[in-house]
Length: 256
Ligand code: TIU
Image (cartoon, rainbow, N blue to C red):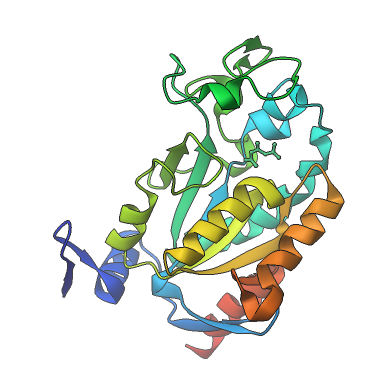
């Protein structure tokens, strides 16, 4: 058994196998090759986490933060089904699942004025809207959409910024579980997904972004956001899709 020095918690494969046993996962996976661009990527599933970025009512439903910024929030719905399929497979395999939520404390002490005062939204962060106060933790709009709602045993990272590492325990959490690879999906492609992937890349994680599990209010930003990730030989990470991940996980099961 290996132990993570910083927190004296067992990590790596043994930890994952024990976790899978505890969670009654019947067929623990080992490695898989995911079809991706710019090239296929081999992942050790025990060192891989699924991270679902900000699939919150505030971004996907009318009356939330996304709409106050002037966006057509219906554009994000396309990502829900693909994410749901990978989430189901991840849960069945015992893969670590992490959900993130962008939002702020009720007293706005973690919301920079520069962010709150930005632009000309119809409602600002902290103002009261139809789903409660805009982008405030604990309000209905801040929560994750019912279709992708976290299970009690899944990790939810509340983040005040666009990136999931800034002012959060995400890095320490991933290290505690021996995670080296991230399957990344969520919204929006060019904002919170891209910021998180860039930070993750600098911290040494291999990121595989699931194109159809991401969405943007701006289709052209979605396309370019993905292109920027995979350019120059995967400068920030790989781009794949949900079906390719399911296929890689399934072929692993049938060859086990
Ligand atoms: N506005 C926009 O596209 N996105 C955000 O403000 N947050 C996330 O992407 N989650």
